[in-house]
Every structure is written in C-alpha cells, then in structure tokens.
Image: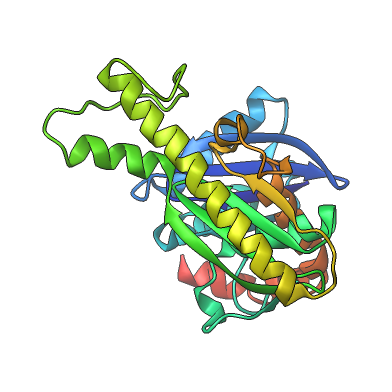
Length: 278
C-alpha cells in the first residue's frame, strides 16, 4: 500500500492506495507543534477503524506547504512504518516544465494538482485550489506550467472580518438565501460567498483567455476545481467544469509511480543516514 500525505496550512489530507486505487482518505487538522508520536497514533487509529494496518504500508509520499511539519511526518513515517518518505521537491520527476521566474517558488501542492489534472483531463487547464489560499494555475497542453494567481481563501477572508472589526461575529461559511440580506450574519455570508464566487469567475475567465493565446493549439481550456470549499463555490457558478476533491492525492500517486524505482534505491541507500539523524 502507498500512504500519501497532502499537508496544507489548515488541514492534512491523507489517503491509502492499493494497486492504483484509492482505498480510503481522511482529513485532520494541521498542527505544527504536534509530535511524530501524536501523528503516528492518529494515523494508526484511522487505519484500525477501517480495518487497515500500518505494517502493510510499502511506501509513503508527502507533499507539504508547511515546512515545519515535514520533519515530523518524516520521523513518524520511519518510526511507525519503517519507511523513508518520498517528498515532493527538487529532484522529483513530474513531467512538468515550470515556466516561472523561480521554479522553486511554486508550491508542491500546485505541482501535484497540475500533474493529476493533466493525466485525468488533458490540457490546457486552469486549476483552482480553494483552500486556505485560493490559487489559480495555468497549464498548457504540452505540460508547461506557465504561472497563476494567489488570493486570500474564503476562510482567511472570514477570519479577517471577525478579527479586524469590533462588532462583526465569527460565522459559518454557507450560502444565504439571497444577496440582499436582513441580518449581520447572512450579510457577511453573502459578501464572502458571492464575492468569492465573483472573484473566482473573473480571474478564471481572464486566465482562460490568456492561456488560450499562450497554448496556441486552439483547444478549449478546461477549468478544474479542488480544495476544501470547492463544492460551496461551485454551486451557482458556470466557470468551473469539474470539481475533483481527490485531485491532490491522485497527483501524489501519479508522481510516486514515476519516481518509485529511484525512490526505492535512494531510500535503502540513505536508511543508515536517517537512523543517525533521529
């Protein structure tokens, strides 16, 4: 079995693959000060609840945008499965050509999403990841990652309203019945949800037009959305073609398959080094 971790700023999504099929997936809160043992016990409990066993994990792959959590998960992987994790970063084969001023600045999650979406849907693509931040990525049909945009996510915007104003409350993110609302909570929900939809569609339409010129193949640009609030934002808009909540986990599986031969050799060669580190 392959155990895959997608570490975001708010949540960690993890999934288990067997024979290329996603068996199960879970979501837990990202907590930087949580220890390797705490993460190990939580993962073990999730496995046991589904009748799975950590001893059956053959390999582990990690994508993270939270560097402080990476070492903890690597330590956890070694201690609880005896495996050295493959980490998305420099030296990993993806098939993408990153056309960016500094390719190392592109988040691991954005690269993983691009690989998965190209495999599943073909290009050219606009990928929207609706998480802590809302990111937009533009990818050509010939696997060039040509850039994107980053905006505050829906939850960040909601938290900012609560934290930076004296009287506005913290609210649940939900769609109110109408844009014109008659109480504070629904008025905030209206501005946040409908406003974010408008921002998403405006950026998407502009990006599609620019990407069509860059790609130059005359092919229609597909728009794929993923992330924690993708379904909430997709309702009521027509700028998103597909919502794929498992896109990042599936991208991790594709990248693992592309790198597993080299990963196995490197893992064995560096096993003694890892033991020395811990």
